[in-house]
Length: 304
Ligand code: MLT
Ligand code: MN
Ligand code: ZN
Image (cartoon, rainbow, N blue to C red; front, side, top):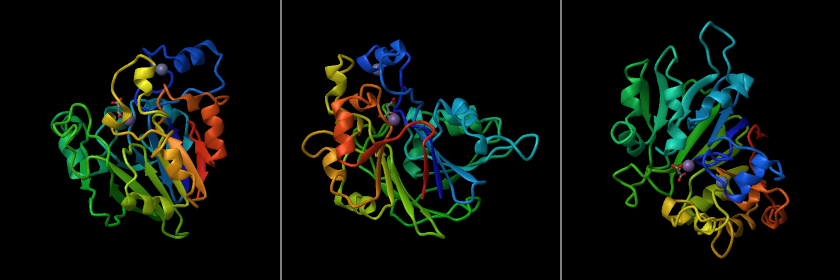
């Protein structure tokens, strides 16, 4: 199974268009040892030809341009993307669907009932797309029953409901239901190896930890180092926890959860532009390395 990171940044990307935090400023100045990041998305294939897109970011046009296997090669209108899985209805995970409107047939989109509800009401992208080729919605179960995608040969998927947040526009903001956010176990049926992908994760419940422990690689929420990071930068008084993201540092933080895990590869993704780990010379980055934790970057390839 091949995993390609299309976008490793959180909503807004890095640098964010209107942000002058120390990371964004230093990246623009050329004084940061770090790299720019587009918004949150990965793609996965077992056969190297048929790719499942996980989340459709506003940056998808640039992401497709950066990865030839997704580009047209076989017909006058063509794509390597065989289906789309959406883990939550957040803007950074869904807006790219509008960019993909020129597709020549309905997109096969896999998401939960809760996500479908947001994407047909508060942010009615699916309704809008019905005026183009439309969306064939496949309901993703929230009871951890595995499912397959007929066009994605050799892969099996399990959605795992996570404690996180519904989007700011959702009527379920701060009162989520199972299925507003999921992590996905992606298994290569032939090799038995699996990736656990969870770019939005507010709490690692014991039920979720079991998926971490059974994975060959976890690719998890790296949004913030500290819960009050946005306030410290003078950006917003919102805590990460209120937005459905678990901080990495401190007691109960993600580093403490990941460090003791036997899982061979532990990688952070969906990294917010305020996070000090984006500076490759920072003590926070060194602390991750010491804990055996990697940081995803755009264009990263993971072979499992
Ligand atoms: C999130 O992950 O919390 C959201 O994508 C934030 C946003 O809407 O930018
Ligand atoms: Mn996000
Ligand atoms: Zn910034």
